[in-house]
Amino acid sequence: MARIYSPHYGHSCDYGVDFFYGAAAVPDADLTTRAWFTARGYTVVPGSDTLSPWDYLPYETLATFAPYAGIDPAEMTKAQLVAAIETALITLMKIEITAFDAIPDIDGGTVAEPVFDDAAAVKAVLPAFVTATFEGGAKATVPVESWADTDTYNKGVAGKYTFTATLGTIPTPFANTANSTATVEVVIASS
Image (cartoon, rainbow, N blue to C red; front, side, top):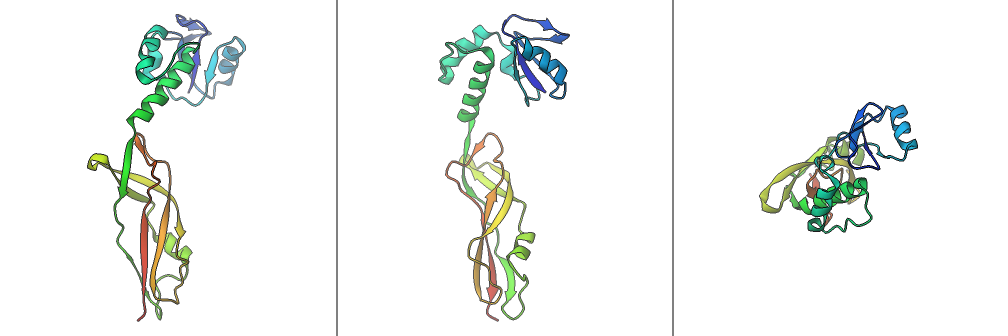
């Protein structure tokens, strides 16, 4: 869906689309409707799947709330004000990751009989998700985009080989500003 903002905040209907205090939602794929509104000076914000709860409020109410979120509403349109409030609230709601749960070492066999031929074979068995712990002890699952061979895995040399997760999108309202990540060790014994 796309959000459409009327230049007139009290607007209730146009081109067969219902507005709430000057805001409406239409399917992103409806390019004809989007073009009609764009040509008439409306602000069209693609990719928003629904109206935000903030869209249902009059501009005056948003402008009254904005300073409490650290926003100066002067010279802002309703579209700009809603976007600023949403961004500020998401920033305020962030719960910081403090650690990732330990992943048990993986038995890589021995130098004589390794379990994995190369780093690609190790990466193929590593988890697609890791568990993060947040301030206050809450936990959430975080996707892993890929694993990096940190210690240059060598099946012919005994030792511990670290693989480090490259994380996917951190779920809202969590944050990882310290860039914490998960690691796992593959252990190859000498015999």
